[in-house]
Image (cartoon, rainbow, N blue to C red; front, side, top):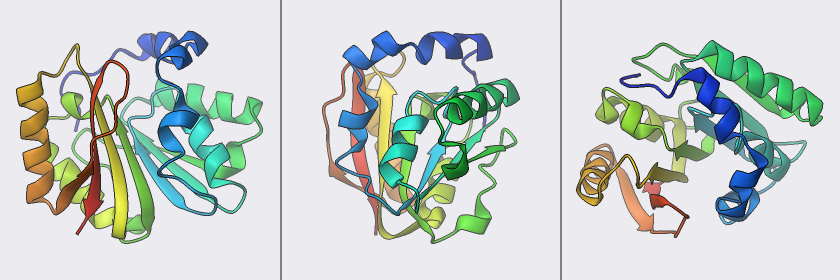
Length: 185
């Protein structure tokens, strides 16, 4: 699904602890994630949100991360091992045109799409896969960077998500981002 990817080496800047001053992963994710759930994170990079997600799902939960860049996933796995969370996280390399998570259809409680949809060549296919993966009533937090995505482009993204059965159920405020919570109908 890759169109114009963030270079792998930028992942080190995106995982910078100072980023938490404006985008604190725990604060952002806590309203949507609880212990024991299965979460899917597409485009996790080096795991800025992943580690907090793994802490929130707890020992009985699971986080599945899919990315098109192997170097990002290797760094994520290294960070997860260091944090003692590797057992909760499954990292998968996916091709550019699919998340390849069909084995999770109807089994995911929460999906995180943070600053990655604008890099996808076919958002309609992405949202179709997300909708299939989500349980009925499951939620997806979608957030795109204001610097890359105009308000009009974000609204178009939401329209495309809606065509795949993902309806807007909230508009959280996230620093430097355009964001929405989507629910599977």
